[in-house]
Image 1: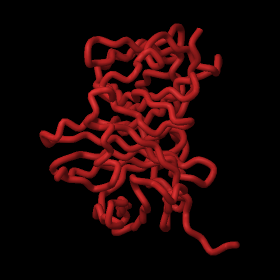
Image 2: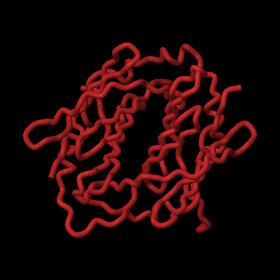
Image 3: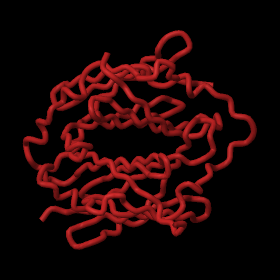
Amino acid sequence: MMEFKQSGHLDPALTDPATRKLRSDKLTGRWLNTNPDTQGIVECTIKQDGELFIVDVFCAGLDCPIHWPTCRTHPLANLEEEAGQRTFALSATFGFEFMTAETYIRVNKGVLVIVLFASFRDGSKRSDYVNREFFYRP
Amino acid sequence: MEFVQLCDRVEIDGVAGPLDVAALSGVWINSNPDTNGIARMEFSDAAGELSVRVHGIGPDGLIDWGLAPVRLFAASPKSRATAGFTCTYDFGFAETRLQAMIMKGLIVLAQFHKFKDNSERMEFFVREYFAVVHDRY
């Protein structure tokens, strides 16, 4: 008997080989922020490399977008998305000396959604904060 | 001040205090009565440290996950009102990371489940909605 802390831990889909082969093309590609005036993430590109996904984000800077360090991450099965969509979601963490940005990335009805949790450790008195932005395929 | 996106380029006047946690207080119930994930969450404040007690739903009823300390998040670097939280449960056989946003009176809870046993279960992601229990109506 497998251990569990919720019934979801026992979902047969989690051990179904087909789950590991869910379509990734809904996630991969180049995505632009739906808000052209964003002061956060401007652009995101997602590529698949075997079992890993490679996430690059570019954020609004003073003169040009700032390329954050590339993140390589494992996919998570996203079994209960709205409208019965089954796909992958990603969890990507970007580390800087003064700040860590923990994100989760998912696609819902063709829109990429990035939720970002920023934690500061530089004594700047800035609050840790959470932000959500939406992206479309150009 | 260091920044890697313009929205982080802010100056904070005065002394930064703890975030206002009023938005999280109370008992939160899953909006989906048929969930097979998390049924309820209760927040408690002890000595200025906020914790959450999660109850999952199992085949035979509620499963108490115990208390976990939460890290609080505002809606912007300048805000002092809580707009989200994160915490982690390590069950030994699995680790569950919770990342939550408060939106329009709901907690939108993202769950990341990673298995550490040899059950070959794939890591998975679930998003659920929670409403605070109240007696106003």
